Structure formats: C-alpha cells, structure tokens
Image 1 (cartoon, one colour):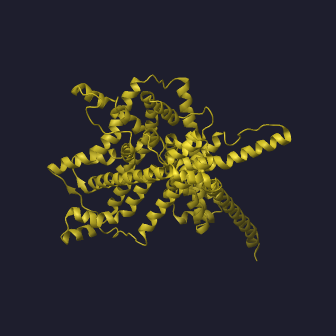
Image 2 (image 1 turned 90 degrees about the vertical axis):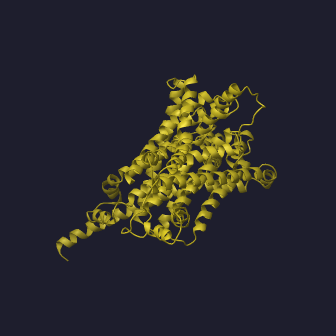
Image 3 (image 1 turned 120 degrees about the vertical axis):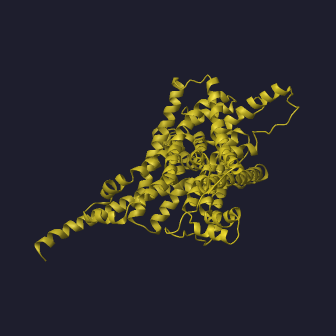
Amino acid sequence: MTQASQTQAPVAHRQSAARSRGTRGFALLAWIVALSCLLPMVAVGIAALTGGVETISHLADTVLPRYARTTIYLVLLVSLGTFSIGVGAAWLVTMTRFPGVRFFEVALVLPLAFPAYVLAYAYTFLLDHPGIVQSTLRDVTGWGPRDYWFPEIRSLGGAALMLVLVLYPYVYLLARAAFLQQSSSAFLAARALGDSSWRAFWRVSLPMARPAVASGVLLAVMETIADYGTVAYFGVQTFATGIYTSWFSLGDRGGAAQLALCLLGFALMLAVAERVSRGKARYHHAGKQQAALPPATLSGGNVIAAWVLCALPVIFGFLVPLVSLTLMGLESEQNLLSSRYIAFIKNSLTLASMAALITLLAAVSLGFYQRLRPGKLSSAAANFSRLGYAVPGGVIAVGLMVPFAAFDNALDAWMRANFGIRTGLLVTGSIWLLVMAYVVRFMAAALGAYEGGQATVHANMDAAARSLGQSPFGMLRRVHLPILTPSLLTALLIVFVDVMKELPATLIMRPFNFDTLAVQAHRLAADERLEGAAVPSLVIMAVGLLPVILVCRQVRRRT
C-alpha cells in the first residue's frame, strides 16, 4: 500500500463515520417528530378506553346518534357542493374560452382566504331576522315577522353553505391541474365515436381526473369535520361541538375523549375509504407527444351561463362577505390600535410564527431523512407525521391535554410531598403545548410543500456533495436549502396562515388570558356583537390573502 493510500484511508473512514452520525441524527429527529404527531391519537384512544363504560353508554343513549347523524349530513352536503362547484368551474375555465376567463381563473381561488366561521358572521349580519336583507324586506313590504317565510341561515344547510363557499377552491385547484395535464386523445376518440361533449366529459375526462378530484373533496371533508367555529355559531351539533361542550361546559374529560375517538375514527375511515375505492386503478397520461385538450370557444347564451356559473362562487364566497365585514367594521367601536387589540395581534403573530418555524424545521428533518434513507422505516415516520391533518384540532387538543395534565398533576404532587413546592401546570398552562398542537395539525401541509420542492433536486447533486466530503448536514445546508428556498417559504406561509385561522385547539388549550384574533372574533360573535367580530375577522382574512396570492401567481404561471 502506498503512503498516499495509507493517508487517504483514515480520511475516508472519518468522512464515512461523520456521514453515519449525521444520518443517525436526522433519523432521531424524524422519529421524535413522528412519535410526537402520533402521541395525541394514542392518548385519545387510551383516555377513551379508560373513561368507563357508563360514560360511553350514556353518550350512545343521548347525544352520540345526533352528533353522528348531523356530522354525516354535513359531510354529504359539503362533498356534493364542493364537487359540483369545484369541478364545474375548473372545467369551464380550463376547457372553454369566453370573455373574462382569465380573470375567473384567479378569482375563483379568492374565497380560500376566509375561514368558514368568518363567512358565518358576515352572512348572519346580512340574512338573520334583524339583518339588512330581512329588515329592508319588512320596510318595503310592510310585512310583520310572521307574514313571510325566509330561509334560516343558522341551520345545518346554512353551515354547509358557508363551508362549501370557502372549501370548493381545494377541488377547483386540483381538478384544474388534472384537466390541464390530460391528453386530447381519449376525449377526441370519445367524440369521434359519437359522444357529445357533455357525455365525453362524464365518461372520459372526469374519470381520468378522479384521483385529483377525490383528493380535493377529501381535503374539504377533513376541514368540515374539523370545523368548530361555524357549527358552534349556527347551533349545529356535531362531534366537534360535542367535544368542546363535554370538556368545558360539562367538565367530562372522559366523555370528551370518547367523542374525540369517535371523530378520529370517522376521519380515518373516510381517508381509508377513499383509498380503497381507488382499488388498483392506475391513471396514466398519454405522454408529452400528445396535444392538450383543445378549449372550445363559447358564444351567445353559453357565455352568459359561463359567466353566471363562475361569478356566483366569487360573489358569494368573497365579495359579499368582504363588503359585509367592512360595513360591520365601520359601525363597530373596536379599535385595532388599542392596547387590547395590539395584544391580540401580538399573541396571534407570536403563535403563528413559532408554530410555522418549528413545523418547517420538523418537516425538513422528516423530508431529508426520507431522502437519506428511503425505505419503509422513513416512509412510516412520514406517514405518522401526516396523520395530524386528518385529525380535527379539538381531537389533537384533547389528546395532548390528557397526558400532559396527568404529568403536571403527578409532578405537582411529588414536589409538594418532597419539597413543599407547588409547581402548578408547567406544561399544560404554557403556549408550548398549544404550539405542539399546531405542529401536529399542520405538519402534513409543510411536509407536502417541502417534498414537492425536494423532488426537483436531482440525485446526482447528492452524490456530488458526498464525493466532495460533505456530511448530511453540510449537504442539506449547502445544496438542498438554497435550491428549496421557494418551497420552504411556501410551507412557512401556509402554516403561518393556518395557525392564524385555527380556532378549536386554540379555544381548548390557550393559556389563561392569552387570546388570539380568532378567539376574540368567536367570543364577540357568540355574544351577538357581530360588528365587533368583524374587525378581527378582517385582519384574519387579510392575512389569509397571502397564500391565496401565492396560489394565484402559480395559476398564472401554468396558463
């Protein structure tokens, strides 16, 4: 062996050992994140099973059937509504040409900026009995309260409408992307065989877009069963409202855990059912050599129909609530510059910033671990971490409060017995547990954005970095992160805005006297002070426009 080779051998050995240690470090971080995301679900299951048969029997005899029935009806209505609007709008703006189509391509995304509970406040202000619409109707006609019938906005149908108006963009965006990627071959073959355009759409184009459409509807359904603000304000009793009522109003932690387990099971059942329904079906595009579907130019009455169908979701999902909230805010006595509101804004920004940063770091650890060690183990860690998005915020809150409250109580008892010191609620009463709930809830969104960007980093770059002696951390810092900056900023922004809008977990877990804009809006609306609720709602909407603008820019680039 030459002297040079003898010198190089220890160096190569040290580099290999450094890479091995770096890989183990990322594996440890990834599994800490994965197990932390799994903890609330496990805790809910244990708490529910130890809650006693009497509690679940009482729930089954009283409220459980009503909660289940209402939740199922709500899911069905939202599924049908988001599917109809999302797919119809996506097909119109993708496969037809009419004046204003470029405007609607972007405008149809705007309702995504609103949380559903903010729309609930806006439409109650407009359509409730003392609202503008009914008051004007009575003034013009001279009718009394019992002389006419008007649809009740505070109802199951009203809650479903609010959710449909803010959630259909999920289906619209994914369906539009699927239609843009389809080849014209199958569609034109169906037309050549005698099918009308409408029949060819139902028999060819829609089945080919099924995975994307199903994913969009599933996202809308998950948001529906997780929603608390809308259904609570409208008095609709679902699993989400039942968990909060059992935890706070009745003080029944066991009942809350059992209801949370029911909701968790329902959410996971929906996700599994969608997967199973696909079976072994595979959807392949014809290839790059095939032309895209040719858009049809509309004329006459078809232009008017397309305008109406595309404009209605934008008008009722964005313009009407924006105008309504602005009018309410102008009549309000709430002052955004007061010390009280500055505290709300500061609390919201603090929680959103901390949660977004920690979630992003956790997502990078998970995604890079998958890159370093692809296989069943890393895939399992990532899948465990994604479970939180299928779990409502109330379930995560209960799942974290139960074990950490037990830990705090045990620590306090031990410290008093041994040292005569009361420690109180060290973990349960802190913002860190609330931030952990946000991380669990929105990890899937951050991980998805990071993995989407990571797919653009060629494997040869990793090999080149390793050949130059880079450790895993060095490769991440010098190669991956600079390339993935846009994806990282997207993930950071998505989680930041989601935390700003999140309500059920914040209501359950926030420290005493630590309120956010979402909590303040909910409290004022619950006290029927809708004008006051409009002010924090407008701030939440303004922040929510940030990712919508980002999405709109991406839509523009694709077309």
